Length: 417
Image 1 (cartoon, rainbow, N blue to C red):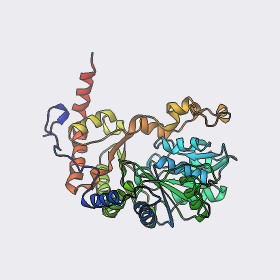
Image 2: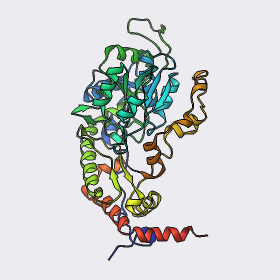
Image 3: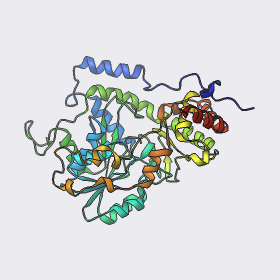
Image 4: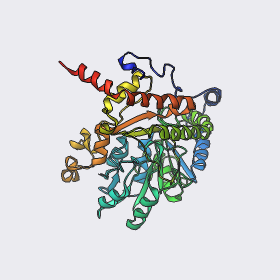
């Protein structure tokens, strides 16, 4: 006999909460108090940020780490440091957070959208190749949800066309591609430490690279245009104060001690859940290529194909939430359909060239389909739990599938005037 859905009056599968986020304790408290009492609260005379930069860069296979106030800034600084010209075209995916493309505009360059692969949610190398023009200067692949993009193919394209590759690794702390860490796969990379991220200090970001010249340029831009051989009030390039503060550095150092084990746990749980729910018709977890040797699972992504599953995404989400499973649809629109791009509300940037741009004509069918009706997200902290937690999630999916007819009938009835 079928268990009745909680949405329809049955007993929920899950009544206790999943792992809370952020995870913190005495190590964070100790470092914060030490920083507070030192009176050295800024990057220029403290020790925490410098220590974190070195540790994070090493963990991610890089010689250089430049900590900054957020991930958006780190992308813009990387573009500026590379010396790319105004109005250069930068290829970005449309299925990503706003900042991947807005940072390009704030560097006075043009985002060009190339579609994602329907199964991996990552930038499709074929779409990138098709988007290249004589004005293309860079590619920003996003390691979406924590799964590294197809960097082997993208770096081959970049080499052929002499393009800069900036990894948007905001989701990918601790992830790896062919056993190489995210952040060391392109020419330069950007990470975020915003509140939801797998490594967090509330706000913050870091640039990683193995290119000495790029690192020096990024460090100058993040520190008011200063250079090591200059005097204090000597400024060489357009820049600002984007330095990360010591309190964030203190939190990040303590959080970094947790990251390796947390990433192993997330990856193990994510793979287990994917194996279980992929047996259901119409449920397609993010496809994991062999080159992905570790997934950081900032998000657990899946596609729901309504006509195969037997219920629409909105119905599935409602039913899962009633069973005690936190989940969401994610982005409502791909970036090229966001109001800023449709209306070219770029402020003082691209004043003349924007007349030539028409993002209303951009068509990225995979991104549009996923946003419109297929994507389902589960957040990273859920995957810090136990195998039993994963079983609860899988059981909830199975329960909804088994009750899809009654779910549809109920929603149809409630929709009648």
